[in-house]
Structures are given as C-alpha cells and as structure tokens.
Image (cartoon, rainbow, N blue to C red; front, side, top):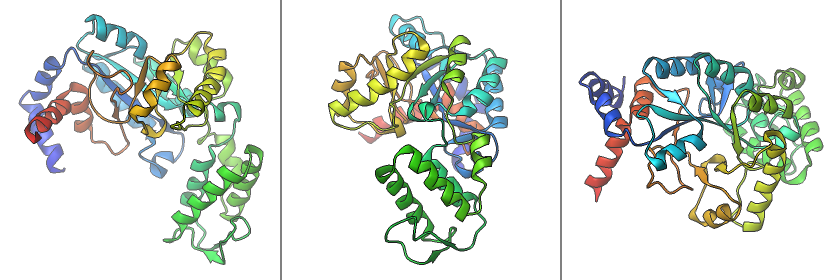
Length: 341
C-alpha cells in the first residue's frame, strides 16, 4: 500500500469521501474506459484494456453505493438547469472496441447502467485489427529470441531481439512505415507477414477480434438497446487544420449518423490530445461538448470543449477509484491549486 492509498483509506474511514460527495453534489463526474480484455489484453496494455472481472467490480461498487448512470447529453442538460442528482454520473467508453459490445455492455445492463460510447470509424468500416496496436501486440506476444525484418523495414539491417532494447524503436518504425506508405489492404498483408516472422498466429488473433472495433451491425444493436453513440474522429486523429478537422468529423459522422439515425453533437479528443485552437472548428461543426483525458469534475462553469474525465485503468487501486467518483480527489486538487498560487 502506498502513502497515497493509505491516506485515502484513512480519509474514507473518517468520512471524508461521504462529505466530498455532498460538497460536490452539483458537479458531474465522468468515468472513462477504453477496451476490455477478451484474453490477455489487460496484461499487454493495462492503460487501455480492463479485465472483465475488474470492470464488474467497479460497476458493482457504483450500484451498491447508489450511483446511477445517465447519457452525457442528459447529464449536460441537468448540470445546466440545476437538476443534477448527487449520484448521477456518466460512463464513457472510447474507441468502440468489439469488447465493448461483448463484455462491457452485458455487465452494464446487468446493473441497469448505460454509457456514452465514442466511436472512431475507420476500423468500423475496415473490419481489421487496429494496425498500430496490432504491431505492438505482436512484439509483446512473441516468444522469438531473434527475427529478421530487414526486408519489411527499409534501413533495418540484420536480426533483432523482439524483446531487446531495440525492439520498441523497430516497432515504431514499422508502424510509421505502414501508416504512411501502405493502404489498408497492404497493411493487413504487412502485419500478417510480421506475425509469421514473430511466430504469432495472426488468423487466431483476427478471429478473436481482441484488437478490432465493433462493426456496423453491432453498433446498430447498441443503438437499439438505448446506448448513446458519439463522435471520436474517423482515423483517430485531430489535426490543427480546420479543413482536416472538418474531414475527420464529416467522415466520422457519415458512418455513425447512418447508424444512429440522428445528429451527433458530442465529441471526445482522440488520444486525449487537444488545444484551444481546436475549439472554433468544433463549434463550426456543431459540436456541443468535447471531453478530455484529464481528471476532474464538471460544472456549468466548465468550458464545454474541455470537460475532464477520470480514466480508470487496470492498475488503479480501488480506493483511488472511489476517491475520484466521490469527488474527494478533486477537492484535494482544488486545495493544492489554491495553495500553489
């Protein structure tokens, strides 16, 4: 147990978490998730994938402690008209991994919860494993001690150790080459060849869909079940150029609004990268809110294009999760900022 978790545990015992919940009753907490583990993804990237067991534990705690989930759209309306309940919160799920459909949604429904799901759509249309994550996963998964990749990557010479110090740079260079020099069909041929060199079964990986997004039929199913689908760009990137921003959102909308049959106005910055320079373009595109990958709570004073969220990770201690949800952590952050001035 760390000093932080010990301090939080003491604070909870003496009632600080309950007090914080009342003091922040007019604020909105937003919890963020990404993918969920169908196999070993939470071991591969614990900052991106959560095990089904841990997600169920989180949802059980929320239910036991009287929290209720609402869509982001409803939450923003309540926050601004003063009708937000003390234990209203929003669960958001980014990217649209297949595991959202197969793992998260059944667990959410079992507790009577809902979520707002931000979906990036290139890999919805092209139903393949996500290229950059797939390359990283192959290097993580392989048991090979030495591999020849020079014919796949210009400039690379000789054999490398896929678990050695050079491996990360090689993986990044492979990703850059694939994303800048190859089309989608060529990328899948490329990554299949890489899997073969690294002795990882690509067909098994692809059929398990552990690195895939939902397809259009699955997204339609979620809409029919009442889940809120929102915007997250088409290619999981948000340039500074207004024309490129328009392209990303237009392409994203074209896919998702054909599924939702309604206009979409809420947005999540891909990879949490944002700047105030994006705001005028978002406003021009009719975006009402944009959420961050930074902790905090929201009020009617929060800039609509900079709404903070708590990112829950596989490695997040339970007491830290509780401190964020109750608002205790945010009170500490506010006190620290005041003291630092």
